[in-house]
Image 1: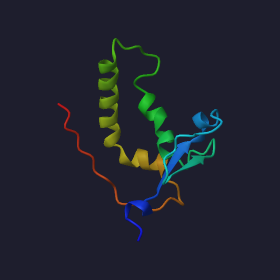
Image 2: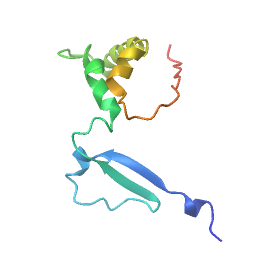
Image 3: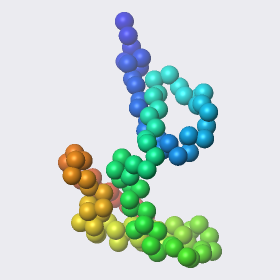
Image 4: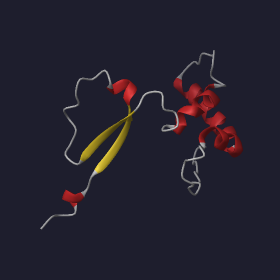
Length: 109
């Protein structure tokens, strides 16, 4: 009889840009399957298209510490959360399946 654990398979998709430099990955546990995305395929990694919007307030700036950088990025994300039509226009492709939006809550003070 097979146990439930033996039936568990995980498919992990990874950007191929970093891993193409590795000859082989030898420490992949049983049940974990790696699938490398083709290079130059932003339609498969929708978040890649958001970087220009996120980078806007930090481009050509230096920060005293990581906390300062984190605060600027946090504020930018708060602004972007209110611009759903902009985000949708950048990340939704006509062929992408329709899904229910996920609401995120932040307990940040």
